[in-house]
Length: 388
Image (tube, rainbow, N blue to C red; front, side):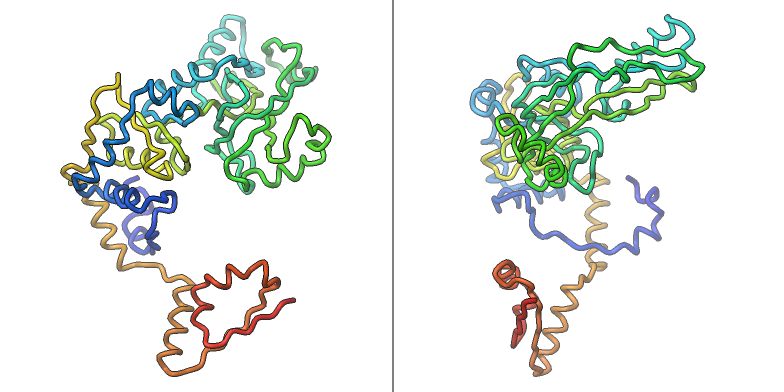
């Protein structure tokens, strides 16, 4: 976003920042250094480029050796195409749609056709057709519970599909002057999808809430799984024509776009590299994997791979602006509470004063590691610990 659209230069220039000096997603320090250079538009060494190029694999190799790895593509068409082929024996779950406000059957069919072609983003995260199969990854497409980590973009593996008899009320039109129509109901409908997320903290509250129900089905459900129910949204087609859609807020995630992968962390990825991709997107794609060993790069029709990013550096106007702003921001570093506390301790020691710290640890065995690693506590001359 241009700076002048973010409150103007005055607001932008009074913002302080705190630098993150380590790429926490990567366990390989050499790979982390390469990513930092790519992100900053700096030139890579020949060894750095060679290391990236050794990660080139054929599509057949990836299919055989890492079939479950998430694929990262630049375009939505490639993502949709791969997901359709990757999910085998899927149950195609159609959304339950109620059309409202149309004047005749022709108009209804016209806007139903328009509705079915709309993207998930245009329908509030609810797809028209959702292929479901247990054992495959899916991405949550709406914010179910932000505080609980069930947010748009969270990826989990579908472990169980719970079905039930259809609700008669779902087939009834809303009261009002306009006519409506619904899609025909199946004998059984999807009630709940149970997902297992890689982060144990995702869906913690949801898991606790449904624990009694889960324990009543010990051979079917697991306490590590998170339930996701169908959601209802209103989709506006015109001023008068609307659709009330009921569907599970998720889409297949065997493959996702690079844009959608931002903020994710994966042990293994298969990334389709295109030389024309913006360098910022190349950085985003490469930084999603936790180690260089988990990175597998494919090319169109298995063409020879030449990593162009970083050979000469990126000296575009956008990159220069970013570099200059980083230089400016170094003079506006945010001082944290820890920084102030460390300075206070150092000043006390330099003045020859004795520094005594009293800490109520509540439970020393539970917090021993926290106390041992704390930056401020370690600077104390004497430490008094209490438990209450």
